[in-house]
Image (tube, rainbow, N blue to C red; front, top):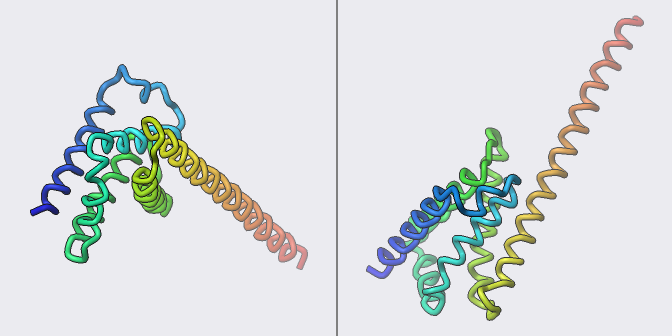
Length: 168
């Protein structure tokens, strides 16, 4: 029964995040960078935990019980999918999966971090989320750079082989 209550809470907060995104007057719509938007959304979702922070550790304990893990992971991945979509993710390759997995990972770590955060309005948790999202952004840039380098060198190699074959 407690698991159902916790899942209801999680779904309700995901709906709250959706309603937040629909309000075009909010600062979210002024943010143009996908990663900054994702950090904003993760922090916004974490802010919804403030009224129940005293019960949060018990709720998280319910979520990781072996017979609750499947539903818990489904809800976590629904949240990360929503965040990626609302942030403007347009990936259509393995990056689609990687981003959602990374967002899920960041959210879980941030929620655990939030349990220990005693700062006003969880300011250290917000900084934690922003630093983790920045790391993902940098990792994405590095991946893209390596991918461009590999493509360039592959084309170079093909052209080199063609020129050697043309010489006979």
